[in-house]
Image 1 (spheres, rainbow, N blue to C red):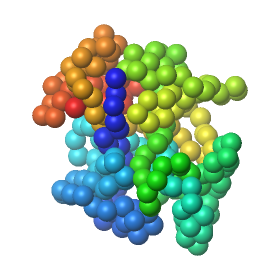
Image 2: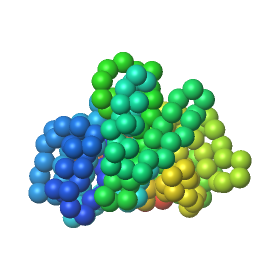
Image 3: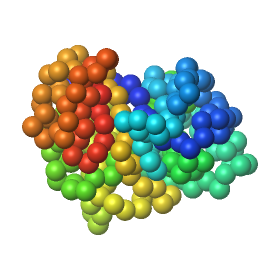
Image 4: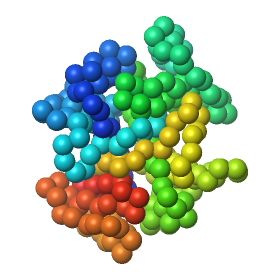
Length: 225
């Protein structure tokens, strides 16, 4: 139903500082910029750095994960460990490193079976929600499927165009938190059809220039185009 993750928007205080951070440490190219936002290329997904100026804002303290080919992971670890106090975790046979950007977003870089070089995409985004059951029901209507649940903490991992983690308020690995008022964009075949599937549970449904935008019950914006 949702084909691709088109963008993830992060709120930042200073565009110059945020642009420099992602360009210097992660080699993300600048695709375009305005006076209020900078759009970086993260594989096939846009990573949008946005100053708070209007709705939708970018997300606050978002934990999200970038992918890199397995063979490149050690190089990233060696490079980033010179500047950051990294935290590393192992998931089966895959490793991930964690560090914070200047605006308190928790950045993860994880090993991927994808081919390519550098950062190849965004494979996970974590949202904070007030009611896990309600949020899970909302996102499964959009085609996400549950694949894992927390045993002690209220969280669920859903599979879709990327992995979506829904967390009730908590600290996760590397003291990461779920993002609030996160702005996500998705590529879909029929934006109106997708929006109609959750229209009765959404707080708002609006036609926008590039598709349909909805506001979920936890204040996250989703645009379908």
